Length: 427
Ligand code: HAM
Image (cartoon, rainbow, N blue to C red):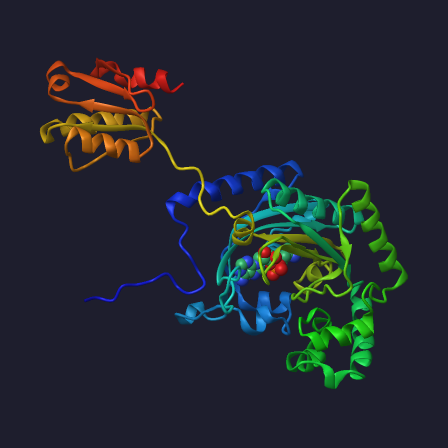
């Protein structure tokens, strides 16, 4: 027997019954993002691997362990599937000189992302994000941080995700990050033996990651260094900026919690970072996350004289669906299921279908014939609103019987008029 294939580990098929659910979610996302003035952008699913290495940071797990490289031919060398959307959007922003066209560019995207992770509940190798990025010379306002956070929460509330919690933190400017990094290294040096194996190596490569380690001993060390409620030691400007963001959130009535331990796994962040969790998801409970990445523009070749501001977030669609417990959308319906009772009448049904479809009426048929009962049951299964039937009498009289599937009422019309009749009935 030939080998049967299965969907690759960490990926899944989105089957026709689930498509309406995805379409509805995507349609809502598009509508809400547009209402905040964001415009859709579609970038390729793969990019130069160095784009990701340079933006996400050589020490991040995503670059270190999870980049899926394409190397099927010489030409493909140096390419990787995108693990996230921010780097690609910044690449496109600079490549298409948006900075010369507008003061603030506001983008959103919906699409698949790829990470070579160890699959588990809520953690996939191919997953989908709804992402939002605001980039530009006008992008350095704390009100923009608040707008971005408001949009993320608005989307999740509209998707009916329960038990939402928003955690925010500030990592300060690039200079602050360097100072805090030295400070943390000096402080954690006093606790180095207490840190887990991962943190021993993080300590050298990216000491910030020690702050969000889940290991109990590391948590204890972190608490003694940073304390439970304190914020990281920021410069006055950064502290002031963070306070302004919080004030704007309060004005908008958005609940949040400041968490000095929130550092995020991607290196490009400065200033505001955030994560949104939901109820009932277990350990992978982040439905969305994001933050400010002003300096990434310079790192990816932006104009040196320009002071860019940039901030964004991404929501995980699979986690949103898990959190809402929705696995199946509304059953799909079709306007017409048309059938004949004798194989020789089939050409007439086939021509009728073509006319219906050209008139925008969705319609299907069975290609195998069968008894009246069997055909009606297929019409039912297809969730058809009307069945169109050509039996012996109808064939002879050049008519079609139209059966309303919900009331069971049946009427007969001339073949030449039936498309118009159905069109009116569907109005
Ligand atoms: P991220 O935190 O890596 O950030 O991912 C954002 C969201 O994508 C997560 O909160 C989660 O819901 C979902 N997600 C991530 N990895 C997986 C996975 N393996 N399986 C299922 N869902 C997953 C980013 O990607 C940044 N680009 C966000 C951003 C935009 N920052 C600024 N702009």
